[in-house]
Image (cartoon, rainbow, N blue to C red; front, side):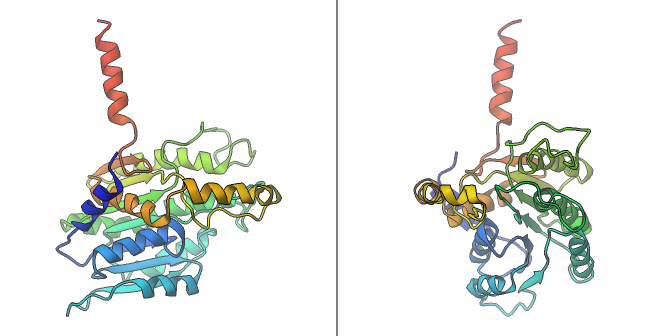
Amino acid sequence: MPSISAVRIANSKYTSTNIPVAIFVGGTSGIGRATAEAFARYTKGNAHIILVGRNAIAAEAVLASFPNPQTSDSRWKHEFVQCDASLLQNVHATLTALAPRIPRVNYLVLSAGYFSLAGGENTAEGLDRKLVLNYYSRWAFISGLLPALRRAHNSGEDASVMTVLAAGQGSKVNLEDLGLGGKATGPTSIAATYTDLMIEEFATRNTGIVFTHTYPGFVNTPLFSFEHWGARLLAPLTRLALFFLAKTPADAAEYQLYGLLQSKAGAHRRGEYGDEICSQPVWTHTENVVSARV
């Protein structure tokens, strides 16, 4: 597990021979915002950064916090694209608008999400709202931006996708109810399982591109809503826990950025401190158990 200081040092060494293009879906709030701000800071603003989200006012504040590069290179740009990703038709419209003017993408970070203690809530498209934001919309953004990611990779540049959700925290898949029409499984936990499977399949189909699913852990972000009556009852305890136990978005962002920049081609699952989840320890344990019983 790398320390926060080690992660900051690693992130500070980031360099790019080109003007990187980075898209942050959900980059106006919480971990997404903090990760976009960290990326802007480490690139000294010398990047084409696109924030995708609902809140234009919040986006203006984020963009205003980015440093303006001291360079004559006019290719850098910081912009906001409005999109309510809870509706897939909006995602498709956004992708259609982006495609002709964004020929390549180096980094795609997806963190737009929704958490509530309330029961199932369907969108106007008849889909579970949590599942759309945590999974379907992210799949759509990745799929739609694959041509631009491939162009970056084929040009010898970084091509990396990171989806921030709950790597390794998923639940069992019900093949008879993948869309959760029966509501037997929580949409957040099943989205984590779907995402683990998603990055594996995307990596298999797109050699050379990085696909990472991360679990940021307990982070003090606006995602913790107190709208539900049960949440309001627990609000004092929750706020206390957030204050003493949760990471700040800034610290969480350092670990997310570390995972984004350090991962190599293929599929990866990373934990709250940026380290790979389980694969090597489980492999070593299994190898030792099996070889000891020859």
